[in-house]
Each structure stands twice: as C-alpha cells, then as structure tokens.
Image (cartoon, rainbow, N blue to C red; front, side, top):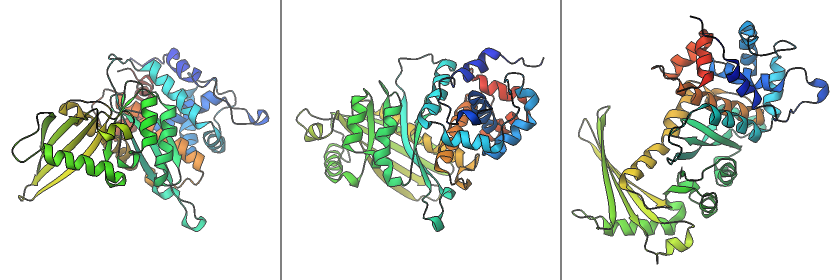
Length: 384
C-alpha cells in the first residue's frame, strides 16, 4: 500500500523555521523561507550537491512536493536557493534543525551521558590560490550516541580551531556530557568553557602543552612498569583482529592527587590517562604507540576506551562519508557562507540517513531516496 504523507511530520519541520529571520528584502520574497529550507535538506538527502542540483531535483519532484508544500510561486530558481542558503543566519539555521531532531528522535535514555567529539575538516577545493583564498575549514561537534552533527563553525585556517572551539561550545548543550578533542584543543580557555557549561572532557595531550605532557609521561613511566601496575591506576584491555592485523590497546586511568599542580593549572582536571596501542601485521612486523589524556573526572579504563574510540568516529562516520559519498573535498564553492551552510546540510543529512533502520550503506540509502519518494519520506520522518 502506498505510504501516506503524514502532514504533522512535515509541519513540525516547517514550523521550526517560522521564527528564522528571512535574509531577503521584502520586495524579493516570493518563495516561503521554510519551504526553501525543507526542499534543500530533502534534495541533499536524495543526492543533490548544491543550489543547481537542489533546483533540478525540486523541479523533477514538484508533483510530490505539492502534496505537503504550498509552493505559491512554484519551484525557486537556483539563484534563490543560493542566496537564501548563503545569507541565512547560520547559528539560528542550525538550531532549527537540531530542535526538530530533539522533537523527532525518541531518546530512551535521557540520563545517559553522551560523547561529543569536536574536530576540524578542510574543504580542500574551496580555496583559490590565484585570489589568495584559503580553503574553508569546518570545526564541528559530532554526537556519537545520536549519530548527529550538533553544530559547526567555519574558519579560514586549521590553526583557528583554537578560537573556533569555544564559539562552537557556546552554541551546543553539553551539560552532563563528555567532550573529546584532539591535542590542538587542549587549551585552558577551552577547558574552562567546558567546565562552565557543566560538561566533562577527555582531551588528548601532546607536545604543544610541553609541561603537562612531560608530567603525564613521567607519571605513567613510573606507575606502569614492565611487570606491574600501580594499585591506584585503573586499567582495561581491548583486542581487535582484522585486515591482516592484530591490535591490543591497554588503557590506564589515574586520579590526580589533590595536591597535584595539574589540578591548579587546568580547570576541572581530576585524572590523567594513557593508552598504549600494540599491533602486529600478518608479516610479523610490530609497532607500538602511546597517547596521553587529561580528564575532568575519574573513570574506569573501559569508559576511557569508549571515549577515545568514540572520538575517532567523527572521522570514520562523518568526515570520510562527506568526502567519499558527498564529494565535499571536490566542492568548489567560493562563497564562504554558502559553503558553510551546504556543509552543515550534508552533515545533517548523514545523521538522518543513518537513523533509517534499513541495512544498507549510506550510498545505497541515498540512491534509494533519490529514486523512491516513499523511502525519502521515511528518512524525513526519522523514527527509529
């Protein structure tokens, strides 16, 4: 039986944009802002890449769109889509989508802590050497448990992540959640922001914080010997086998003494951690590396393992998909604001597609959404 469009669902999505300020002048407003936004996300899910593709898709699907959109002046032009997506208030635009997700996705364990990984990604072809235009660099927050991007900020350089991360934290709710960031984000201002917002953190520590780095190394060199582990150190071991390689990870967590200078220097610091990764390939070649972390709360080795592995899922389940499935690295949009909005829509689309229970790849689901209106509608309903 043909799937019937539930107008209450699409109304919920459209209504989220009712209070979004329209960037267009009143004389140039013909197409409804909320309908332009709905068409944009639906088209991106179905395979569109930018404003031209969004308009092509909307024209092809006009009959279907008219079952739940008014379209008083028909399908907007590609220039209309480009202008709206480039000029809309980015922060409020993201908040509208996230409010819709909050209302639409049932979260059964509201009390459970979520892990939010913050990391950056460069859209490599968005730069122009002749115009001395640097590629757009996106800093985004990925919630592992929801499989969703919670927000993002565009910067001109990777080094600007240090100033962008506090701004991004201001935009998202992290109370009771654990924020994970790589070593570039191990900064006292960032740590203070996380604590002020009642979140916790697991931060990678490297040589950019030399004193802290050397202190943690010295501690674990003494506490974790070849044959014994200090009784104050919690530990957990994981093993992975596959792709011709065997890996073992040893996770160690130690609470900081109240007299530790690290506690005084780093807001909220309660513990330090080390992860040793040992691997062996099918030829018998072995390797080992060690990573160190600063924690705002003492946790078990098992929870540390979850936080550390969850952080890299932003690379595997979001950034990799953006490049391979959505071709983001090849996108040549020079308009920084348009590039930022399209990037967020693609990240958001990944989250919606992942919610659908069908056992298929994101590529497969995206193709189905482009071919089958009912399947696209199932994705937009995001019930899981």
